[in-house]
Length: 116
Image (cartoon, rainbow, N blue to C red; front, side):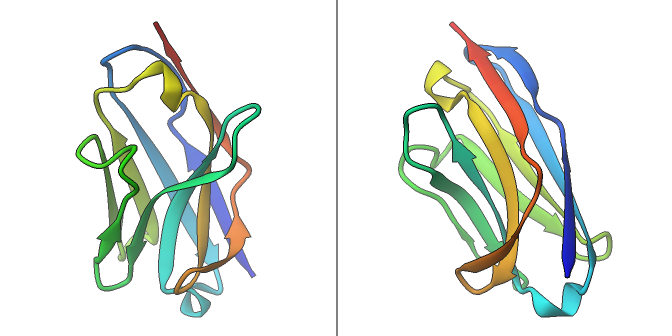
C-alpha cells in the first residue's frame, strides 16, 4: 500500500499561483509514476500532470505552459506548481501514484478555487 497526503490548496485570484505538494509513504517500490488529477463539478476527471521516476513529464494542452510537476525522490514528494491560474482551473485536485499510467493510489484531494 502507498499512502498519499496532499497539501497546498486554497483560494487564489485569477492570474495567481499555488503550489500543491504530495508526500508518499509505504510501499514506494511499487510505484514509478506520480501525478495529479482534477475533478470539477459537472466535468470529467482530468489528468493534469504526471512524472515518472526518471523525470519525464506529461501535460494536457489545457495546462501546458502554466503547470509544472516536479518530484523530490529523496523525500518521496511530488509538487505541482500552478501559475497563471484561471477560474476554469477550479477543482478538487488529487495526487495519484502507480506503475506507468495505472494509478492505483489516490490522495484525499485538495480544493483549489480560482476567483474571477
